[in-house]
Image (cartoon, rainbow, N blue to C red):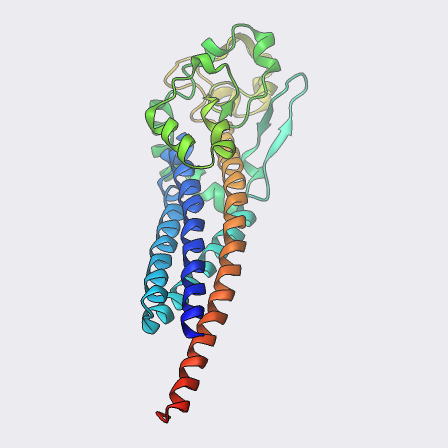
Length: 306
């Protein structure tokens, strides 16, 4: 019976090992997004947690396969801690991304975003002057705005576009798929992640002025003759200098937060599924470990060792 229980535990650890792969993939996907590349504190927590689960699962598999009871006990303790950390991360992510800060814009298919519509914690991570100086430089050095003029030829196309906070769908012919993108798309959940490789990155909050300002469209990153600059403080911060645009605007900060929220909400779906499976595996593994211990004590009792 003890051998059977250990075999069950080994199989369960292999399942936990498989669960770590989508967690790592979700973390790498998040870390590879342009906005997360500019906010370093958001990049690696999920990846690190996934790799820890992978290592602990391997340790549990070794302990079960070679009947190392001490290693199995350590595995159960460490896995309990990691499951608790993953649960805390999920709850925290849902709490801080609950508010989305979006509002509809008349005559536009896209939404715009208000900074005060997001949680205080998210705003502190991005909008504080110390953090934003680095993030703004990172965004300005990226290509989030440079391709807009190529993607939308006239105003009607631009206003009809479903522009998300940071990314907007465009023709794949303008998208150069990198080797890294292709690899991760093929290896990890291609159906779940394929949307991120068929979209080109642009930004509605950083690349154009707020609609309320009444600027006249010339091209997606060139706007002139505002009608109502008093409508929003960002109206005065807009610049047609392609190195400045609206990178100093609250709308840019809000757009970045909106995109972070959207990406984390998508990643959370995978993390929830993985968490449920890990909890199920852990409970069965605990039961198998307990049965193995009981059988070992009973065997020793029958042999007169106890």
